[in-house]
Length: 337
Image 1 (spheres, rainbow, N blue to C red):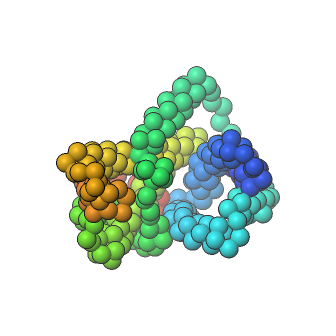
Image 2 (image 1 turned 180 degrees about the vertical axis):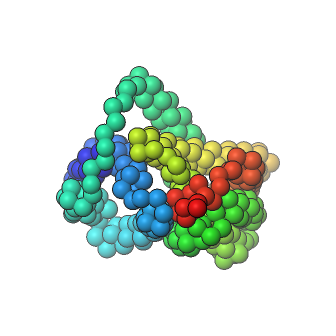
Image 3 (image 1 turned 45 degrees about the horizontal axis):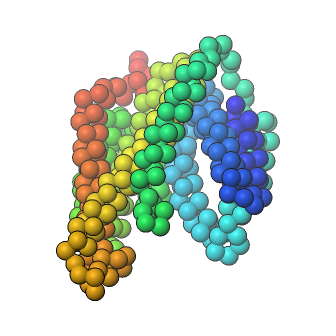
């Protein structure tokens, strides 16, 4: 499944780079998603079945979490350089040699896991996928701004560094301590970010709170990954990994769409209300770039991020109530004598 997913993703990248029509590019991106959906859960489950419980699995999970975050950071920078100095097509073409190397290398470097017969719930898979796709599509359509582009960023490198550090601490302190610390910092960072307005500086209004919030990802997701595979059987490793990846992707997409929808709903309402009280000669100040529009945009972003802070606070409650796994249950824990 891992090799198949990588092969599909690589082929889709080649087709995307060669696309000349919009539908061809969209189809290639959809095929990329299908390939990633095959490869990502298989990669995590292979860690579970390949590395024995203890230091080896802990180290492997730490590398997995760190590289996941670091890859996002490198991808943002590399993508910008490729589109600036080469062509947007190279964002796709760069995946082709890497994908070929991974697919061939996995054939010889990774052992095959044991097969377990399963019942394929095709109707359930089709309806669930279609339902989530339609939900996210509808929310995303509302989440785009006047230019049709959502304006959001990330700090994945900070998350990766925090994740690597947490992977070293978990054998000593367990999973609940870093998860609780991350769950405490997340609403604080998001609330700080929600205070941004049209007069804020980039450093204190965006950069620093975003870095705080990004660090919480490393504090939460590395121990969460270890909890996922703690005491999980090889037979259930693939299912558990798939559910984990699906939850991340669907939750992230829905959360981003909801925040975007709230943002532009507030912006559009504020601008319309402002225009209704302005004369024709002064209506220009409500256009993009004008002071009325800038204030409406900052209000929309602030309200949406405040909702995000509330969601992060709910995550804190969930962490405190539901995370009850013992340090001895984690794959990094020493054997109990």
